[in-house]
Image (cartoon, helix red, strand yellow):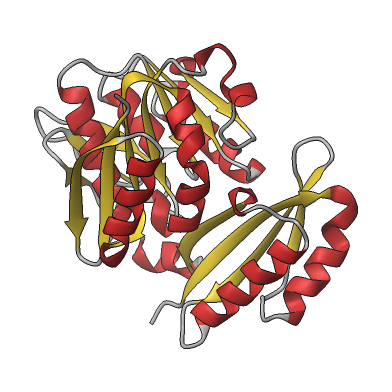
Length: 292
């Protein structure tokens, strides 16, 4: 059976990277990889096996990082599977329908795209980046709905990962997407996916999180934001999502369990949003909100 992991990407000041990595190991993380981040910062990448005790290890790491002054917004969490999953599933991973219009397929699938659908071609890797993870599927359905009327002129893919959400939006008719991610590898994967699907001229990638500086003249003018991350990060980002959106702008927030819906909805109501709807697939849910 394929082993599943929780991946943590932690942005810290470069001078603190070595000490932080050592401390993370002490509280139960696996090996820590250090990558170069934005100027003056480093990214620490580590993993926790999704098995008994995983929640305790995650909370211990979060508590440790808090004592070191690392904000929750500087931590990205993703579900992934062993990379052997890619090879093992190659013969089984074929084109699949998402919603009414999207057709997601791997490069080796030579079958045609069903009539009336638009193809998104990607190399499967991260569980969150294939479209098959329920939380990703929830966001893809929300993107299709959002683009069904007047597609957004300005969209932000927040925590882009492989870039599937932003690319899907562009294929659905969005005019331009800014994709933000703290992980440089995710930024490169997003660029590659956009190029592979012929939408790179309408995709801007930036190695950073959400801020007025990251969006520049888009700040306060964004039509739609898609974020498939985790509750704690979504909590920290609530005021920034509000600041980034134009009046009437909307956001879909996922990466949460069904039992966290009321909590997330309350957080965003308190941040000034109105609640549009919630959706659920299996044990995962999404919350869609609007800025009045």
